Amino acid sequence: MSTPQRRPPHTEASAGAAAADAVAAASVEAYPRIVAALIRVTGDWALAEDCAQEALAVALERWPGDGVPTNPGGWLMTVARNRALDVLRRATVERRKLRDLALLTPADGQPEPETGEDVVDDRLRLIFTCCHPALAIEARVALTLRTVCGVPTGDIARLLLVSESTMTRRLTRARTRIAQAGIPYRVPSGPALPERLPGVLAVLYLLFTRGYVPDGEPAFAAEAIRLARLLDRLMPEQSEVAALLALFLFQHSRAEARRDAAGNLLTLQRQDRLRWDRAAIAEGLAALDRVRHDGPYAWQARIAACHATATSADSTDWRAIARAYDALIGIQPSPVIALNRAVAHGHAYGPVVGLGLLEAARAGGGLDGNPHAVAVEADLVARQGDRLRAATLFREAAAMVGSAAERRALLDRAAELAR
Image (cartoon, rainbow, N blue to C red; front, side, top):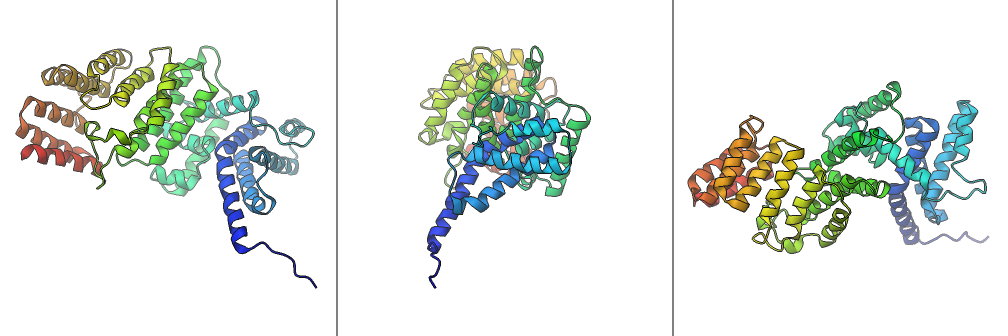
C-alpha cells in the first residue's frame, strides 16, 4: 500500500502563517463592510457581528489547505451571508429579509466586488450610527472600535481600562439603546448632515488623542487615522474630514521622535526632525490642500502643518501660528485653545505678550488646576530670564500631572534651570 503524500511540516506551517496573515489583512477592510451590509439587511447587530466573526474563523480553518482566494473579502462576505441565511431560516423570519440577504451575492455565485455605491453607503451608515449623539461618548468610542474597526472586545476593554465583561455589557447596552430608541441606520441628509458630522469627527478626535498622549495606547491613534482615511475616502467633499485627517497625520508623523533613547519625552524644539515621518507629512499636506473651508479642524491642521514643515525649531513661522490661533479662538473658544494661543503669541511676539494672554486665559477659571497652564507659565518666565522662578513652576506642574512620562520631563526642565 502506498503512503499518502504529506506536505513537509515547514510547508504546512508556512501555509498556515500565510493564511493567518491573509485573514488579518482581509479583516481590516472586509469585517466592517460585512457587518455594515448584514446590519442593513437584517437590522440585527449581534447576528451581523457573529456571522462576520464566524467567516474569519472559517477562513483560518480552510485557507491553509485550500489557498487564499482571489477575492478574500468577497469570499468572507459569502460565508458570512450564508451563515446569516442559515440562522434566519431556522428562526423562520419574514421572507423579505431572506430575499435581501440573497441579493448580497450575485446569482452566478461569484463573490461580490469590494467597491460600489452600496459598500460606501453601508460603511457610512455604520459610522454615523455608532457615533449617534443619543449614545454616551464612551459608548460611541467602544462601538466604533468594535463594529467599524473590528477590534476584539477584550482589546477594547484593555484600551479603555475596564474588564472584558464590563465592556461586553457596555456594547450590549449601546446596541439595545440603538434598537429601543429607534436610531435610524442611515447617513443624515440635508441640514442634518452638517449637524451630525462634527459629532462623528469628535469621536475620531477623542480616539486619536487617547493614543497620542504620553502614556496613551498607540492603537487608538492608529485606528483614528485609519477611520479618518476611510471617512475621507467616503466623503471627499467634506473639508473638515480632510482637515481632521491632515491634523492626525501631521501629529502622528512625530511619533517616533517624541522620546529619546532612554524613553524620556522630548519637547517639539528638541526632537530630531530627521526622524519625522515625511510620507505622513506629505499625505497630510495633500489632504490639507483639498480643504476649502475655515472650520476648527482646518485651522488646527494649518497650525500643525507649520510645525511639520519647519526645517528647524528656529525656522518655525510662529506669527502664522499665532494668526491661526486668533482665527481658531474666534470660532471655537475654549480655555485650552486660549492657552495654546498664549504659547504661540509668546513665541511670535515675546514672553511678555504671552504672559498677558495667559493671564486672560486663566481669568474665567477654566484653567484652574491645569498643569499645562503652569508649565506654559514656567516656559514664558524662563524666557524672560527668571530661571529660579521658572524651575519652581515646572516642579509645581510636575506635581499636578498624572502621566509619569510628563512628570519626568517637567522635573528635568526644572533641574536644568536650577543649575
